[in-house]
Image (cartoon, rainbow, N blue to C red; front, side):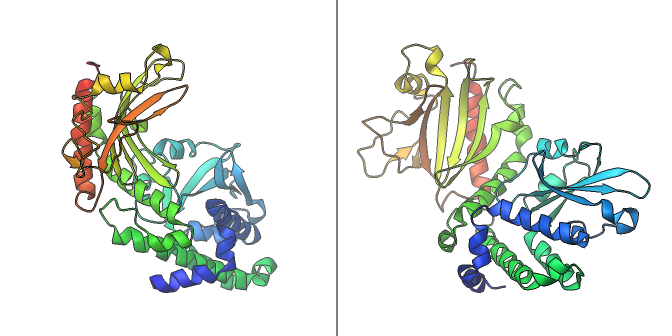
Amino acid sequence: MEFKDAVNLLNKSMIYCMSLASKELFHSNLWAYLIENDHQFIKTFIPEFNFDNYIDEKITVYREKLHRDIAIFLKRKDGLDEHIVIENKIKSLPSANQLEEYTTILEKHAFYKGILTGIGNNILDFTKSEKLNGKWIYRNYEAISESIRLLASKSQSENIIRNLQLINEYCDVLEAINCCLNYYLSSSLGRLDYSCKELYNLRIADVYKKLKGSDFLSFVRKEQGYFESICSKEYFSSGNISQNFHNGKATLDVRFSNWKDENTPYKLIGVQLEDNQFRIVVERNLRFEKGKDADYLYNLYKDVWFDDSYNSKVKERTILGYTTTMKARKGKKYDSYLTDNYCFVYQYFDICEENNTYENLLELIKHFMKKASLLLEKI
């Protein structure tokens, strides 16, 4: 399917419009419906599934059972109870720990296989994890739509036959979504570029940004050993490389922090990439330090971490020698967030076409995190 054709199809499709209310839930609910009405649709997710080993009447489909998107309970002819887990990850990546937790026994049913679904190939890093030991496989939206269309055409289920036209239109929609998102993912290959003009009208720009952010974060996580080598375990774990989404912007964090809970003093230092901003950040819960504020925190780190030579009055502004569009508020040389629980202070320079390759951004992250590691015990 061509990109323009995919855009036109989605703009005209009522099914697509309906799917926007709850992007991941819509697809998971529909897949569960198909499997419930014809168990053969299990092969959409596990093509090699052998029904000869199972009692068909004992196959049961559940939605959101103990947080699994779809759980399928099976009874083998030899008496063993098993289950399958399907996790739909179009908007974000799972954690290896989450997937490992999902491989446990579920209501006396042994784990048989896990399936991750989504768009893009960064999810493959999880399915290849030694920790998961081949227990999870990946099925992308294109393969899913092809399989659903084929199995629906052969189905003997009355409900499937009655809704065949809708199912085929759904497959068209799934292929078009896959086409549009992959168009931008492939055009920005190896670069952290969130530009996606046509996707705003389709209301899936947020999905693209999350996928793009996740893809870059997968690239960064390959260097986790480096971050562990320059910092004590007290300040770094796998959770210190993370992704969030705020106000339509993907937010990627790499940080050193000894945070335990809101009732314990802590300090945090690191980098945050939000949209086209490369931020150098510090954070503390200053409620344990009476009378202290964002100015206090900035002054602790100025010249050794923050750039105190920043001048908001000049036309060509820089932070640590990098071009920035940061505008100081009320004469400050930094930006900040202040809540009852924490004070977050940062400066940023711009991520642009000249510096947005994955390799370059990773080197910048490593540079600043090395610098951060030297400040942990000093300040």
